[in-house]
Image (cartoon, rainbow, N blue to C red; front, side, top):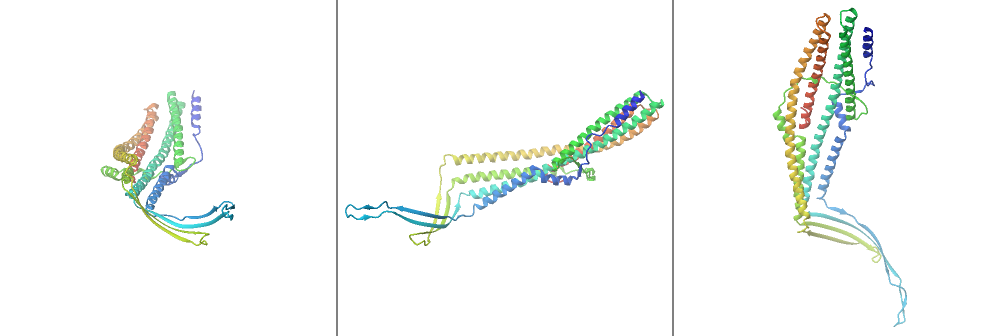
Length: 436
């Protein structure tokens, strides 16, 4: 029976780690954020949306400038006089045939809208508001992307630390199995001690394999976010473990509700909708346009001498009735304003609720870090004392195994509390649009 226990223990100790591969590339959090902003579709699309709105603003400004055209044309006119015929009265032969008159022309024309019921002003203001919304949306998108990448980075880092904890648990289980086996061979121990230690080692090995799989998944996800096909490891940073400081929650809440990227985006969209509503009402005003043209025409009859012609025209158009099309546009624009007002109010309430949630999570994590660190210290001391008592025959193997499980659990809780604080802090940064 003792030989079989030793063979089983040796088999567990020789199990190869899961997912062995080449050492993945290591990057810092700053490098991960920089590389993700250059590769993530959401960030690229946000910059593209801003470029689109910048073009819309330039197009709206161009409406104040006259439109110019330079027509150039050529014509070949053919006039037919029929066939030759005999005049029945005089008896003379009347001529027939065709007469051609080639011609060409060049010109320059300009058209300018003098007054359009303030439609251009309102359209430009709406375009500028949408440009502001796109700029605010970039900030919001960047911080949302940072939130995603930071969480993935912390997942990789936390899983790496959990892997170390599980490796330490396996090492402790192997040492305890060696002690139990030695006591059994010397006759001072019991077979149940060796069996319990063997079961503990098997469970520790299983948890280690799970930790290796979780680390591989987390590093592969981080690699995708930074534009790498494969696993990317997270580089630890001592600044992650600086003692948490208290935040000015009232000031942060006021700042977020007043000027967070989400609020600024909603405010800009509301302003754009209001300007669009004003622009739709411009149809009740008359439209005054001016056009000027200069044309030079030459043909065969004047020996192809260019003859100038100039025109200047002022025109006013007024449409008192449009079969409710204008009124429908105005009503739809008013509906959009109401929708944006409701969206802005809901955005502020949502930010306030999320801040309340993250402030609570931040406070809980801060307290949990202190408690978890004390628990780890106490569990390490308990393991040391229990192992000594077991060697002296005062404690049982189950006391040792329980103490080791408590230590592993305390170490895992300490890691989770530390990274819960970092994640809650990152959530707040994403809401307010700046680093804390």
